Length: 168
Picture (cartoon, rainbow, N blue to C red):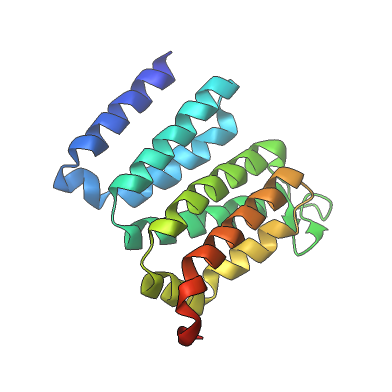
């Protein structure tokens, strides 16, 4: 109950979107997504994900995308499935299903964010390579939910960019 109340307060802050809150929004988005790993129940995980979606809807898109991609990259690494080999098996530890839950949440928020991005911003981010590298690494996960999430993001990117054929 306490976690849900705190998340409710965070959502209200973002609805009112004071300048200070807006300047810290990318960090808040990353922290909320990472909190999914330690959520005590599915209900709290769902509230965390709704909060992340609401935060990402309220902050400038150019601020949200780098934080989402950074969190996604870190969580794919924490999940232990990197480049098709298990970090945990190599003695590097691993976040297990908690990290996979964060990865899935990141992918869901990213899939919701992509259609809102102007095509020039999406193309610029894709040109940097960080987004596709994070998605490639996530797709190598052993979790079917993570792989399904990656495909969902790729489909949203395709739909967002299909009118930009001249840009390629």
